[in-house]
Picture 1 (tube, helix red, strand yellow):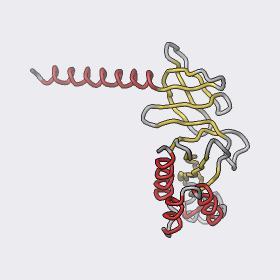
Picture 2 (cartoon, helix red, strand yellow):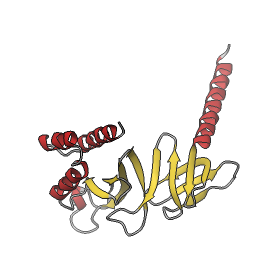
Picture 3 (cartoon, helix red, strand yellow):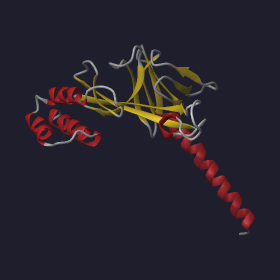
Picture 4 (cartoon, one colour):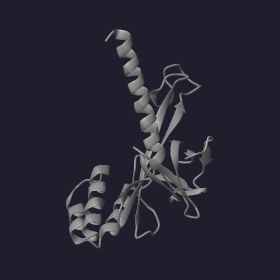
Length: 207
C-alpha cells in the first residue's frame, strides 16, 4: 500500500467519523417547546440567551430565545432550561448540573472587556494595556428545591453578600440533619463542596 492510498483511506475514515458523529448528535439533541412538544435535531450553538437549532429533516437552522422553549439538550454539553433568575428581568438558559429534589443550575457567560482608551498606554482597565481586550467570565449557581423559586447560592462575582448566600444554602438543606451538620462543620463554601452536599442530599431524599 503506497502513501497516497494510505492518505486517502485516512481521509475517508475521518470523513466517515465526522458524519457519523454529526448524525448521532442530530438524533440525540432536542428542544422542548412551551407546549411540551419535543423536537429532535441538532443544536448548532447555544448561549445564555439563544439557541441555534436544526430540526431533523429540515435544511434551515432556527434560533430560539429562552421565552420560546422550556428546555434544550446538546450531546456532550448537557441540558439547559429556560428560567428566570433572581438577577434577571427575563428568562435565560441555565445548565442543569444536578436534577434531584434540589436542582442545581449554572449561569455561565463570557464577556469581552476593552482596555482603557484614556490614560497612559500600558495602564488600561484591570492592568490591561491601552487598546487591549480580554475575556471576563461570570459563573453563578442557583438552587431550586421542590420546583420552588431559584435561590442564588454561589457566584464568581464580587457583588452580594457571601454570608447571606451561605445562610440561604443552610436553609435549603436544613431538613437533612446529616448534610446540614456536615455543612456547618466544614469551614469552606467552594463550588465543589456545595455540589457534593447537594448530591448527598438528593441521594438521601431518593431512598
